Length: 162
Image (cartoon, rainbow, N blue to C red; front, side):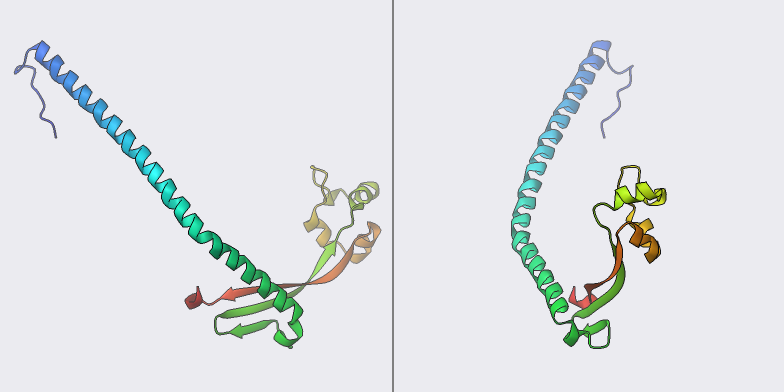
């Protein structure tokens, strides 16, 4: 830490000169810090680009594996999910979920407006899927929508497999 100068020890000119030296040192430190920050930013960008290049094929492999697993679960559901919706495997669990989903035809918005079903219409003139999902089948029929069963497949990794 710099020593503090007492006014009685130096003349006004010496105090001004010492203050100017401190200002020059402050400016030099700031410039050096800015140069180092810029250099660090360039280095971090290079490191990030290097790791991104290494991760790209892994991400592609991950996407391909997930797509394969989803397709396999769907095409082999009778074998995999024989009477159950969960298949416990050494590295994780395969999950099958069957739920009712509403399919909404393209003209449903106009029909909702025509029939006064304002609760399902968003201000942006889009249908509120969540509101329509709650409707009874009779009301869905009026706009040409229907409730169909859809299967969803997912998986969960065990902690030690991650």
